[in-house]
Structures are given as structure tokens and as C-alpha cells.
Image 1: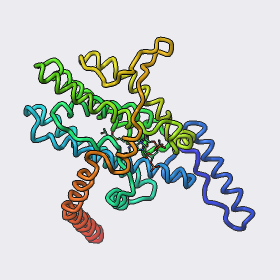
Image 2 (image 1 turned 90 degrees about the vertical axis):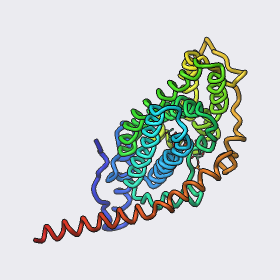
Image 3 (image 1 turned 60 degrees about the horizontal axis):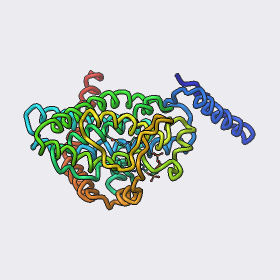
Image 4 (image 1 turned 90 degrees about the horizontal axis):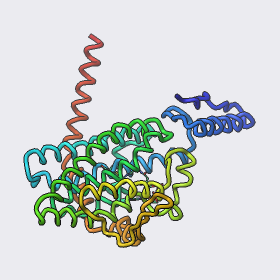
Length: 334
Ligand code: 3HC
């Protein structure tokens, strides 16, 4: 429900413009305080709108760039069953990108412009997708750890204050939950297979563990957007809270898998009931954000090429839509 539709501003003279603006802000504040959803036609502060566009665009870009490390294994999946599952998963990620670009468009931006910004390096995508998938076990590790981290981060977004984003997240989270299980199942099979397969599973977890913790973003004290995004109900929890939740959720699963995580400082704190983990290498995180990760250049080069090579599909779709519209218009006139 939206309670923020306060009608047009009373712009007849300066004295009356100001109270209308105050009313609109008060309406927005009331809605946020009541934990209700804002809808596209509701008034919102410009900073709120820009923050949502930044986050949703980054999220959408992550989904479509995230197709690359896994798409890389479709032709090499070890069985037809594994291939079919992986194709469906990669296709799901494309779908997530589409829901999210659509959600961003409700804020008055065009997805073509967002893609241009991505291709120009002016909008980010998740750091995690700049790491290589070296073996089949990496597909398991991505499903278990990366999709697992995505679920922890994204389930609270189903309750975020902006309706179109929250609703997109409901479906995305259901699919992510399936993705996480398929990754767990791949790793479980490998971990309980031959010694070489077990070693391959352990090696993949060793390489993906720390980058997965970095996915949650910088520590709270170094996160410029968290406080305002939480006050606006966009983020429901801080980066560190969610990171801790992920570690607590994942370590018992590692036990079931028969795998370990590469952290010598890891210990269970009886008093708090949390797993305490060692220091994260934030220098590595910042280097990846600056484009210096192992696969940044490759991911962007591939994305730009795919976009250019897909131009004819977009042109054909526009031509088809125009033709349909013309047919409908001439049918209506007849
Ligand atoms: N990778 C790249 N950039 C990151 C990042 C990461 N892991 N974590 C933070 N950043 C960036 C922020 O975008 C921000 O950049 P900017 O100031 O240039 O815009 C800067 O680092 C500071 O970080 P903040 O913590 O202040 O930023 P936020 O408040 O936006 O929090 C976030 C970062 C937690 C990632 C938040 O934006 C969020 O929850 N986003 C939605 C989820 C999302 O985008 N997930 C990406 C992965 S999607 C995925 O995994 C697909 C699945 O199929 C596996």
C-alpha cells in the first residue's frame, strides 16, 4: 500500500510551494517509518531515487556478468544432467538481470543507458565475478558459496522499501535457493568421491571462500552508503551483520560436505554463538573494484562484444514491435 500520494504541489506562489514540499517529505518519512512500500508514482527524495538506481543497476549488471564464469562450463559439464541444470541456472541469472533492469526503469532510467554506463566502466558489478572458474568444482563452489551469500544478502531485500525492487527479489531469492542447493550437491558428490575429486572440491572452496565474504561489501565503518540506505529501508542489515550471518550459516554445511574453509583464525565463540573469522584482505577487494582482479578485463571485453554482436537482435525486436503496433492500429481503424 502506498500512503504517499499527496497530489500535485501547490505551486501558485512561493509561500505555498514550500509547505507542499514539506508535506511530501513528511509523507515519505511516514511511509518509511511505518515500513511500508513506495511505488513508482510516489514522491521520493532525489537521493533515495539515485541510491536505488545505483544499487539496482549494480545488482542487474552482476546478474548478467555472473553468467560468464558459469557459462564457461556449459560445454564441459561432466554429464547431460549436469549440463541441463547448469544451462537452466545460467538462464535464470539472465532472467534476474531482466527483472532488475525492469525495476530500475520504474525509477525513470532506461536500461540501454545503464548498460552503456556499465560498458564505459562507470557502474560497478559484483567483485565476485572477477575470479576464474578453473575446474568443475568451481561450479559447485559458486552455487554453494556465491549463491549462498547472495541469498543471505538478498532475502532482506524482499522487504526493502521500494516495491518493484522488493517484488523482483522474491522470485530471484526462490531461484537462488535452488542454485545454492545444486552447488552444494555438486560439492557433496565430489567431496565424497575419489581422493582427487575431494581435493578438487577443497581447492575450489579454498579459492572462493574469501571472495565470497567480500561480496557483502566493505566493513561497516568503511561503507559510505550503509547508514543512509538503512535509514531509508533499502538495506535492512549492515554489510558486517550479513557477512556474519553467512559465516554462521555456512560453516555447519561445510562440516556436512566434509570440507574446510581456509581460515586459521576461525573459532566458535560459545558466548555469542557466532563463528569468529580472521581478517579479510580488503586490499584485494579494492584492487578488484579498480579493475585489477584476475578476470576484470576478460569479463568486460566479453560483455561489450556480446552487446555489440546482439545489436541485430535488439533492432529486429524493435522492428517487430513497430510492425505489430502498426498492424494493431490499422486493425483498430478498420
Ligand atoms: N562488488 C563491487 N562493488 C561493491 C561490492 C562488491 N562486492 N560491495 C560494495 N561495493 C561498492 C558499492 O557499490 C559502493 O560503490 P559506489 O560508492 O561507487 O557506488 C562502494 O563499494 C561502497 O560500498 P557500500 O557498502 O557503501 O555500498 P552499498 O550500501 O551499496 O552496499 C551491497 C553494497 C551490499 C553490495 C549492496 O549494494 C547490495 O546489497 N546490493 C544488492 C545485491 C547485489 O548487488 N549483489 C551482487 C551480487 S548478485 C549475485 O551474486 C548474483 C547471483 O546470481 C549469484
